[in-house]
Length: 491
Image (cartoon, rainbow, N blue to C red; front, top):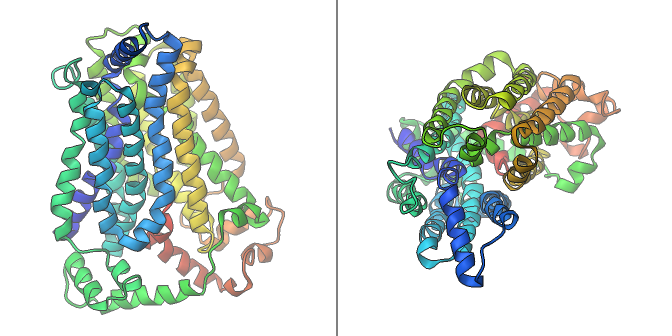
């Protein structure tokens, strides 16, 4: 029970808010632009020109990702010093501050408050999307660790859907009520603040960082629901002894390591294409896309709502699909199908958007899975930092540039995303090996020829003392991915 409460509370105050803030700017866009124009006219005595207004709005939308990048960078020392649970709790200060700034921006006549609030909310997202998976992976039994990890992805989709529901004209999607859309952010944050303190800290953190064995044992007992947790404690200590002998590689060292050159390139390409494939453009600017397509303005909010509903249902079932079909077929097939539907979208932008959401959701977690599978234990934190940086910067690029792409290409705007998907699918077809059920040694062997190094050199690519048997490497890899320690820079 405590495990379920911890996972739901953690996700509701963290990944839910991330998803909510992806879609919340969509419904009130027209009213917020009007507020920007009125504020500008009151200050300077003339209306803002259309291009400046578009730039202001796209910055408001996309600046969220810059905050996310900052949060992802600063989260490592924060979780190490404060712990996983306390980081999630303290992070709500950002959420509440952002909610107050954004919801009062119209009353104060300051669009700068809304932009600043979006940045701060991005910091909240960057921290929570790193700290939450770490906390959940460290409190859950091995048998359900993968399933519990899906909670984060599901709540992101639920957050997106909730933002769309509250943005309906019958609720907060009107000129007078749009500030309430941002004030609602306080509710999940306060719920987390009220419930989370009554749950234990991560037992792994208590054991390895605080060296408090008794508290760690109590935390294990609470989350696992059993009295005898000696085996779990010993497993964490044994893993710690192995990791103590491993010197972590910096990002610069990783980029200079020839033996993992194509692994790094593949992660960058996959992560970039994942963000640039067009899904975020749909969340950010759905109403505007449909409006430009000539869809009746009264029906747009409900068509938008259907995209969020489909995405949520697809996310719930995507975990099973990923494990059955493997990474390579889903990535290449997903991008390929999206190319087809982007072509259809160019002609019609209604039902096809919902179908597009299904194909986007099928591979939504694979880029992060590949990052964990490609690299040895000492390289993995640096690899996740690279992946996270590309992830947030690509998110920012989509949010900032899409309005201008749409203005310039109009009904042909989605062909840009089709081209990106085509480039990604082509690259992955020729470069990406299947990694499902493969050991680290087998994956390294698949890349060795392309990296123009021997397998032996591949295995000793960073430090001589790390040359272990294949079985030891695989054991370390599995435990490292499971415990979530190396997922800090995911976002």
